[in-house]
Length: 154
Image (cartoon, rainbow, N blue to C red; front, top):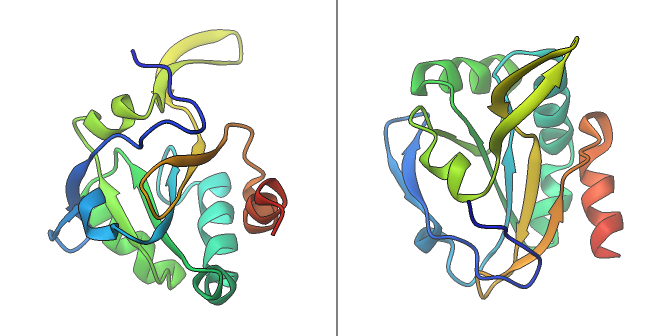
């Protein structure tokens, strides 16, 4: 497993979004990207995080950011999640966990004394040159946009 750090080149990815359309890092050349990994559509923490990004989407766009969410859920699940919560950004369906593994967002978790593999909630801020500017591993789901702006000091 590669150990990504701030300043590294963002790993190239390609996937399929909620509409079955291709999406890749190359689509965002020259743009700043908030790439966030989350465990599951329609769960309380994941919904809070997505809705916080939705509620602050205009501010994010004004600061030059594009937002992309990634989870192992299906395209259909993503489409329903987007419709239910009126999300304005794309979600990638990574059912085979290729992108999750590329970004070290799949791994060992512990809950209630049990160990299992799952999505590690993380956010990567990728700059216009496709370098990792910031990695957030302790995501504040209800205040994620302010957390991102605070980490970036903007």
